[in-house]
Image 1 (cartoon, helix red, strand yellow):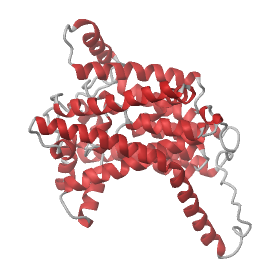
Image 2 (image 1 turned 60 degrees about the vertical axis):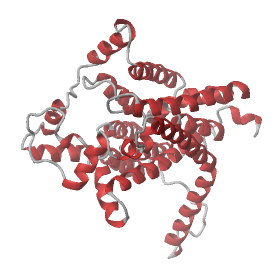
Image 3 (image 1 turned 60 degrees about the horizontal axis):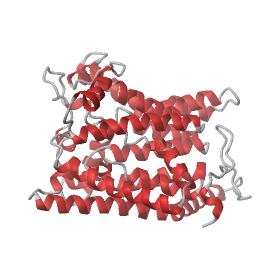
Image 4 (image 1 turned 135 degrees about the vertical axis):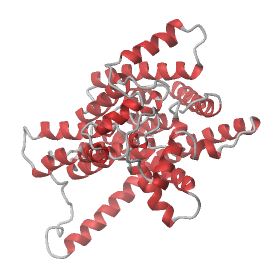
Length: 412
């Protein structure tokens, strides 16, 4: 590997906002060959990108397989099945219920019992794919999550490669795979699907593919409540770029990005017959905005007041604190605005919620740009230090994932 690979490289030439990337084919502007050459060019570009990302995807798969192996061994010693952990427990059970029976028509008064809190993209895909595939819906759900996790890892690599070159992109993908709650990427949850939409939407912004950026952001808004972070990243970046040059595509992307999130929130309101229907549902799940008061209270409790805090809650607390530090470092490094808006809004939602505390490390799993400062630092470190750091991350991820699934008594 070239010695320059350890340093951030300059980004490839970018198109002006809203500008279509130049087509090197001189025949692309004439006749019937336009569609054929454009399609061929797109396929060639995808193949090239996939070949470039192959080592990162192999590394990603290796991290996840090692984590799954440790989980299997640990579960075997506890006489516990692995499949229910991956496919049918906690949120996975809610999504399977929606895929099987649909959404409720009433708000009700029971706490933690209204399935309208869960966004529709993942259960819709599970229901649609189950018609075409063998096995149960639970099997289909896990298969979708695993496939989406590789698409997400590819998107994480693409963003890192575009900004800083191959070495940083490899490290970024590895670090994202090795997050303490990384097992969720292969469970019947929405984090992998959401990260795939978000990563490729951010990549589309960075490369000037505005309609793709808006469409993918809209899909992310149909996948998780935090899809509004992707929408904000696209819309804010698009609107600011219009100050320099007007483009209908950029304006369309700015309007399209929040459409998915707004559509679901609006649909819930219509279904329940009240304008604040979705937010009423969230209140039944104890998810109200309190500006971070509950987060600070739980942090003080875990770090200062509880003499024997639960180990998993210590990990969650450390993850939240480190994420804030990494965001500051990313801003100091002058990350692209779209990445900063995405991670900033994501942190604002996670830290400012008055809801349950223990799943917040999982809620931050899609925030892969937060890992860029670490990837950059490791790219410049000595090979010995880099190997030790990556080994520690790998083993730590495998341990925490198994602990989360087999020792921690509640949802991830």
